[in-house]
Length: 566
Image (cartoon, rainbow, N blue to C red):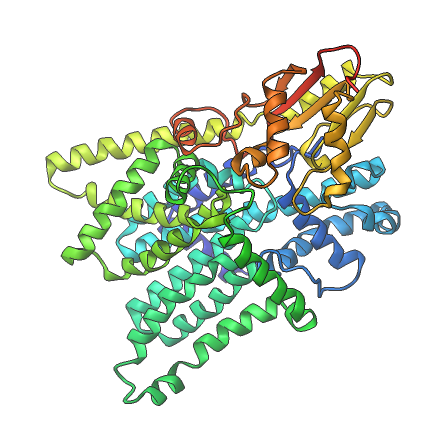
């Protein structure tokens, strides 16, 4: 490392000693547990992303035709993380054999491949998880500088600490999905936008426009970053432009840079424009449809607030809500930097969007965690600088928030349930060649079974042909299988929206009522078929494992009667 660069780093650390400390804490919390891989301790979004990134290598084609997240940047980042793993395979002589069988590794049926190939898949899965860890730590660092830019150093410290102790954000950083890298580009875009707002520097604003394209390429929902950037562009150029034509000439480069950065990191759009258009239309339809597998009985705004509470812990969540109210009050009174409005210009419309239709999954609130952390950091700094009585109360409140959130996150990270390992150990100890097991979900949701046990798989899913899984329901009607094994990842969906497959929901209800089958074992969190906002608020007040940790409830049921009924 050049001495000048090393000197700059040492000077920066001396000036801001807190930054490496909080970055180290964030790294430890996000990295801990990423090595938990067997038996397939993952979920379809993660394995699907890994499989797509692998396709770039084994098909030797960077122009993949999948735009499920709106862009391709995350897949390229994953593929880049595979390079050290690939070099290891080359050095150890495994590369040829692995590449010859790599096409058989998919998101659903991949667990049946050879042990060596599955081990290779775990290698790249772990590498992909490190991508999320690195970008998660990067986001924590960016929040420090954003808080400092908006108010002061104290606000930056609080903001980075609050994100580090948001259990939902930290645990999402354990997995190789696009959500955490997206928040890095989103918050970096905010930092550049705020700096451009303060300085009026055109180059900084151009950099913000470029980063907006990277954020949208990572995940399309980050595209709303263009709203605050547009406001700064208008504020920067409108007054000095005499006409609309002059204004357009002055600002054309900003959207051009955003588009260029997007298409440069999503070049497949030129090769597969039809697939891109189809995915955008599918996304719009699924996001607004009234009959999809994510509609709950509670209104969307309440569900998303419950997700935020669950992902922050109840104490930090309540403080965040208080912070939003106080920040808006400070802004209206003119006692706070007006650049803070830029965060709200994104957050408010985004929150409205994700309360609609099929947008009520937990990952949708991910961009709000760092934004709330910044607003809470600003409030924390303000409270700590008031007059003595208010300051004393503020310091006590901040201490409570940081301690509870820190403990909540630490417990959530260390106490991840291991339902799949436990269920796999049980099946191998209790099932043999004479047993018959029926399952109704993708293999990635389930434990492993002994090779000699007969396992009938019927994947009940809205995207799979009904004729493929209808025989499984007919067998269940006859009590044909001796054992049935269910996963909460799967059966939750039939209770979230009973209009999708009402017949399936009815049969699942009968199983849990133990009419013809009795529950002989459960692994993981307690059985709960009602994913209500109320339950999530209750979970947010405890110190139990965070439910979104990648390990579902596994339920083993055994037929009560000795023989099938038909």
